[in-house]
Length: 224
Image (cartoon, rainbow, N blue to C red; front, side, top):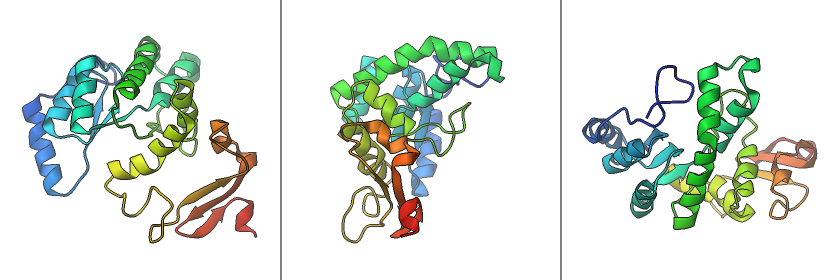
């Protein structure tokens, strides 16, 4: 569908037909690729699901039919709540075009409602932030978990969306996503219990260590 930051496009309109999407996705599947579809519009989501997408990025203007199709097809929603939130909060004084700020503000409540709808009917959800959009920085991914929990996702469900669910979506569940013998040891260790306070995951003072492939690469434990 059209985008928030793309001038002259409308997020509530689909840009590609099912046939057009199917042709592209068929070739991507031949190459063994997982397909993520950028879709704010409900019509765009439905077209992408019919064409064979594995995930819908944003899902901002989701309706009942799109949610049902995603659940039945096992198509993930990657809500990227942070993208609209940071754009709307920063505003034009930070250099973001007025058209983008207006679209972000106009759609934010509907985005949150669509996320709640997806949760309620059992659409699979994986965490993603759309990092690189205004003031939505790489390395600040954990803000997305706080936003999901603020909309009544449980802390455990938010952590699952970030780990094992995301691994399944990417076709990497045999390698990452859970702590099991034989899997790659990519871990984050924090001082505290994120199940009672999800914000601990973005508190740098609570970060004890970041482990990549079994080796500490950041945090106090790297020195230990």
